[in-house]
Length: 173
Ligand SMILES: [Mg+2]
Image (cartoon, rainbow, N blue to C red; front, side, top):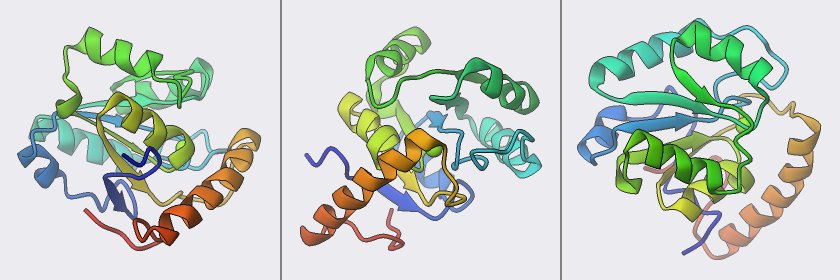
């Protein structure tokens, strides 16, 4: 298996077909925060994301944020969205993700991770064996560590394109 290849690739968290995910048996959605829900330097939680999460909860999903950002940043978002979150998740290391599934009682086939980076979100998801959904970053402004990751991400994406597996901005389900 290609460890950097996402199972799905969509433009944003708003363009994902969630009823399809539900039909596939997915019940637990883990969202990256930075450049997935909001831009990396924004501290104001977006209202549209809250509306989406309310809708998803009504559909029967459990929704959480799974972010490498520290607690102090994450807290603002989780309290506004009224959902739980894991901060300092240490993606792409699989430890905290495996622990979360165990604690929550979800199986790998029940769970999807949604994020904007193949070096963190997709890699950890594939390693643990959950569904991985890559979305296009909201902004091209990144935290320093992410800038570093993007350099490697571009190289990985080029390799995947050579194998005819993945092309930037060509979305698939
Ligand atoms: Mg991100």
